[in-house]
Length: 215
Ligand SMILES: Cc1cc2nc3c(=O)[nH]c(=O)nc-3n(C[C@H](O)[C@H](O)[C@H](O)COP(=O)(O)O)c2cc1C
Image 1 (cartoon, rainbow, N blue to C red):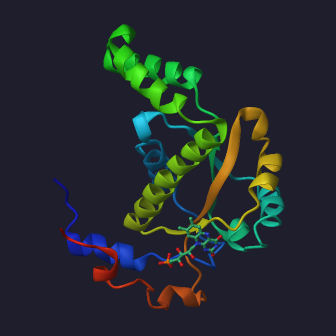
Image 2: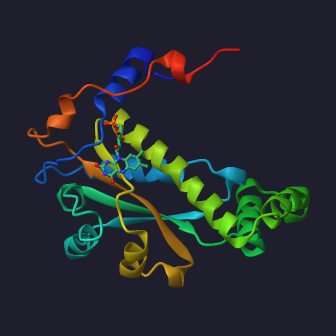
């Protein structure tokens, strides 16, 4: 059950837009930001493997360096919180073991009882080559991005998802290769500037019957 009515929920989804200009003087309060961090952590992933890491870029100097590799987009430095979503370069037996150990501990289960689950995951991942594994991990981060954007809209926080970034340059600046990670996508969060004309622009979406079929 939820306290949210369908019209209230849709109102927030219509209110959100990819924010181009943030009001740099407005910061997301700590309790709301923590809720957004938790929303990232609560994101579901395939098999629950969570092949990702999230970086909150607080350092303004670092943000300026990242902005230079983000088509110069102002959101990187003007937003309240700038987030980089990174994915694992590879996923293998080590990551599966780590996940199963954690799961057994949290659920009070014997790790041996999870052997069929381990076999299923190993089979799925074992069929992929390295680039397919990296691609699969990257796809998972988009689930986190979607959950983050919906969470932000629900809480009345503006966001701009950002693929207009040079992932290799981001990797170098954040030292990701040595951590086994790769930049996937970024997201700027904060509060819209009054001058952002995109806030009042009509939503451009195809008609529902072009995108959705009931069978
Ligand atoms: C994965 C992804 C990457 C995006 N990258 C950028 C970006 O780099 N810069 C930008 O201004 N908007 C970016 N956008 C915003 C889209 O252009 C925008 O969401 C789309 O046009 C729909 O408009 P709306 O979000 O305002 O409803 C991105 C959106 C998504 C989902």
